[in-house]
Length: 300
Image 1 (tube, one colour):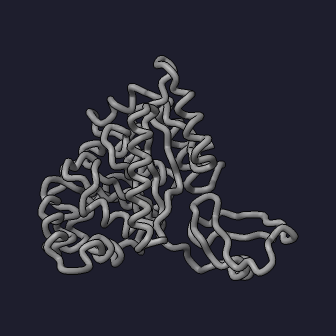
Image 2 (cartoon, one colour):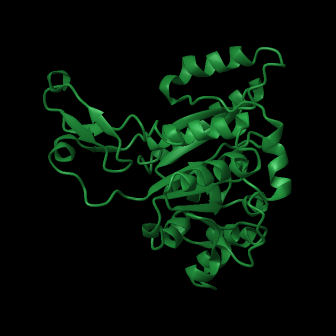
């Protein structure tokens, strides 16, 4: 029996004899989406929903912005329409893309400007909703709300997301009201984890915080753990990677190897695919795009 995930469109061949009696719900191995089993087999949906993916970990220096921008740019190269949302007050996503937008997420959330004046096209198929220092005011706005503050981002993004196949959300390090808002908006999480002991501890703490959110919003799940800064020149990177695989199994993605081109490309306002298309960084982020889309034939 062929089962098609209504969210990511991944096809699964299922042996009907192995389906437990009374089973009604399936879970996609590619994106983690749960959906009615037999309805998906009987009929395909007219249009898949926009996939909402957050790139987050409550620790800095693990490659969150590099991953968010590279994932968004890779999906755009694959032909998907992508909105990249920066919820960090540093606003580095715009810098990485070589842009200086005059408005962004703050103006959209406050209603100061309409979507068409806050969303800028960064590349073909790729649009940016920029972050920046003004987001500090949004954090205060969220804190002042008597109730529903955690849905501020949902209220701003849901009306516009229908125009995109993917919404990729970059977050700030730490745990603040905007990060909580991201977790109430996205369904899937990509968590970059640099291959060092302190980051593993940061992952454990993040999972504890995520668990507290899931008590109120079970829809958000950690789908992809992305090892970053794999450097064979330092001691024991493979030991840490093996530990990750032992703990989290199929959630662990192909590692992003240490690559100086990844750190150089923002200075030129270029994505890794533009700056060094043949580099390890470009190859590894293409692998991530293939995994998330469930399309191994991409970029062949």
